[in-house]
Image 1 (cartoon, one colour):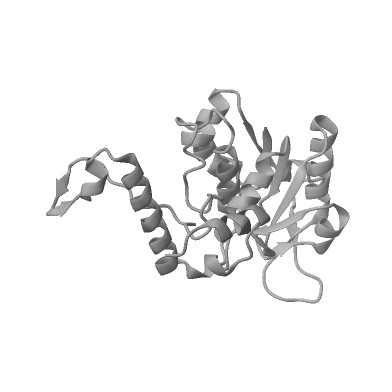
Image 2 (tube, rainbow, N blue to C red):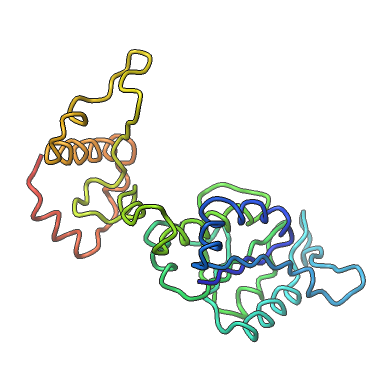
Length: 246
């Protein structure tokens, strides 16, 4: 998998891209993360990437020429990409979307800055418009890292345990009411008077599985009941019909 992140600040992303999951994936040859400074595709001596908006208003707007020239240069070299444009008006990124992108051979993520981008960037090429939430950041670099890590950790061989990516919050499990992960415990058995639940210590795997499922259901209902209101995929609708009522 090749993930290209177009950014004005590659030096800010380099330490993270070379660390932990993203770094491990690249060391194993399972993914490549390329940080591309689209300022390199400017054509004036000042290397201008932004300008004032037509019609007035605060802030600066990213110009279309360097970004589109950068995308076209990259695709001539590597082939077509699934293109992601980070914008507050995009669809909120989810684990399901991460799994969709995981199946792609090449992803391109544009991390914009300033007041936004010239609308012709969106109109000229086919993009997935994506947001990571209803809040404002100074730029798209952090969202780009979020998407890259969410996708790369799904690549087989990246994580230490093959089931690590499956037994997580927001994954499509057999029980559609258990969206959030169950609580986890490790040593010491007693810490500041708080004890690990006895069921986890007895070695009864059926009882442990039942406890974890109940905890997952309860945590989802208490913390994120909105997740239970979303339409379910067909396979989970069937699972819900088969599941005994609480």
